[in-house]
Length: 212
Figure 1 (cartoon, rainbow, N blue to C red):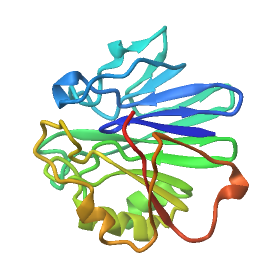
Figure 2 (cartoon, helix red, strand yellow):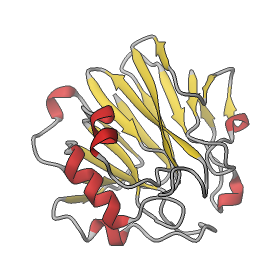
Figure 3 (spheres, rainbow, N blue to C red):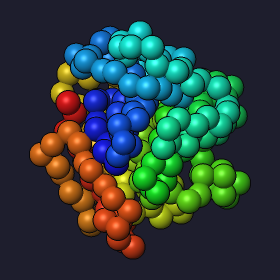
Figure 4 (cartoon, rainbow, N blue to C red):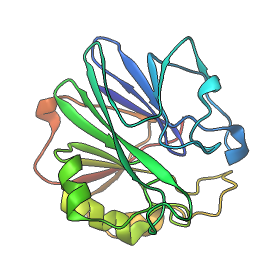
């Protein structure tokens, strides 16, 4: 499978036979140009402009923005309810976490998760091989809380998202504070990574992908 980072919290996940999903497409008001995108499905963690710009995805993709289970050819998708803040949604409402199974790999996109790490939520999410996690704080969990999620989920690969990159207009932190909490960090020169089940090692590696 292939994971491509399109910026902010947006990824394109592509299964080996070509089935693809776009996660959390953003509006250019974020501060980044919007890349050309197409996919078979689009997942939306919540309806804020920096996560639900579904009209920017070409074609006629299935839009998944509610708690559900959904199957595409070669891809299983499960949407799990969570909160966008630490007060059970009173500040910013709900958030959907998406679990994808592609090519025998379990990928978890946490969306704009804002709630503290709990055993109940962790149990719902496991198993996870690849974790796509917000780290910028302010509107989501911050670097320290993201580290706790990583330590308890224990994925083989962690890809940070929702942090302040060049041009970002949001009041969120850079990725550095999160990276400084780990020893095994790889800053990739590309926007994409390709993984096979036998590529996954026991230890957790942090991989920073370049925004396309």
